[in-house]
Length: 475
Image 1 (cartoon, rainbow, N blue to C red):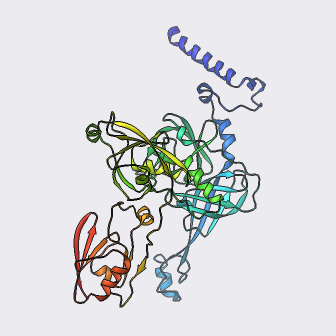
Image 2: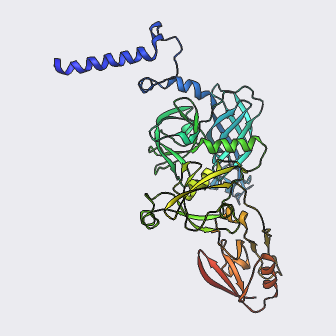
Image 3: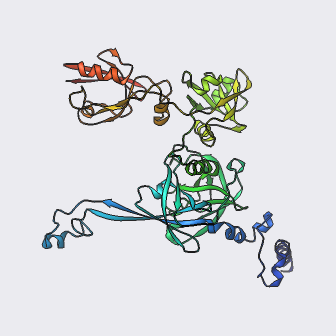
C-alpha cells in the first residue's frame, strides 16, 4: 500500500508546484487576476484566461426569414379549415411562414464589423446580433462570398466593441491547441477545446475547399463562431462538421483566418465580391507513379495538364508537364490548395512559383490578375421564333471558365440553362455546342444565326462531360 501511495504524493506535489508557478497570486484567495497561460503546464490547469479574453468578441446571430408556402385551398371555409388545419398550419390562406435560425459570428472591427458563415444569414429578412453582455443590435449584410461560405455584417449603433486579432493561419501546425467558441443548439455561448487535427482539408461544402480540421466539438449553431489559439488570436471561422447524427463526432472544419481576413478587407473597402486571381491552367495531384516517371523525389505538387493561351501561367513561362510544388514558399499538393493560396493574395501582386521540370527545380514569378470577360460572353436567351426557344448560352472566355470550372481547353458555346423546347430536345446545362448541321459555330451570334436559318431536321454536335454526341430535332 505504501508503494502505491508514493507516486500519488509526487503527482500531487508536482501539480501544486505547477499551480504556484503559473499563478503565484492565488495565495490571496484566488481573487487576483490570472495571466494568459504561457506554457503547456499552465494550459493544463485552465483555459479561463483565454476565454475571458476572447469570448466577448463572439456573438450570437438570430435570423428571421419570411418563406412562401402552399396556400390552403379551403381558406375561408370554417368547416374545412377545421379538419385540414394540420395539413396547412398557420393562418389559412396566408401562404407565408416565418423561419428562424441561429448561428454565431466574430467581431473583427470595433466599429461593428462581424464575420460569419454565408449559410447562417442566407436569405434572411431580419438579422439580430446579441453580444455576450446581452445587448442586442440589428445588423445588415454588407458582403457575401458563397464560394468560401463567408459573410460580413455591420451592426448598427455599436461602438468600441471587443474584437479578435487575426493570426496568420499558414503558421498553424497539426497538434496546436485551439478553442471553439459559439452558440451550439441555441443553448448559449459555449467553449470547447481541442487541437488542430489537420490542415488543407476538403469538407465538401465550398469550392475553395481548404479547411482547418479540429477535434474541438462543433455543433449546429457553432457555424460562424471563432476558432482561436492559446494566445487568443482568430485562426479560423467554424463552418462545418462531418457527422451522420448531426452532432459532433470530433471532425470539425474552419475557414482559415487568412482567407477570412481577405474577405473582411474586401467588404470594408466597399467591394461587392471577392475577385479571385485566375491562373489559366488545369492540373491534377501527383501520385507515386507519376512522381517516379517525372523523377520527383516525392509525390508532391500539382501537375499542369493544360494551359490557356495567353493566360497568367502561360505568360509567366509555365509549360505543360511542369509540377508546381510551392507558391510563395508554401507547399501545394492539390489544385484547390493552389487556388486557395491565390485567394488569400491581392490582385496585382507578384507571387513566386517553384516548379519541377526536367529533373530540376525552377523558380518563376506570376502577376496575379483577374479572369477577363474577353472576348465578350454575349450571354443571351433564345426566344420564340429564334430557332430553339428557351436556350441560354454564352461564349467561353476566362471569366466563364473560372465561374463554371470548365477545362481551359474547352471549345464551343456553353449551355447555361434550358427551358421549353431547348430542354425537350435533350440539351442540358453544361453542354458545349460545337456544330450546327456540320458547320462549326465560333460564338453565340453565329450559333443563333445557324439555328434561326435551320429548317427541317437539325443536328447539333455537342460535347457533354468530355464525350462527343449529337442532338437531333425537327423544327
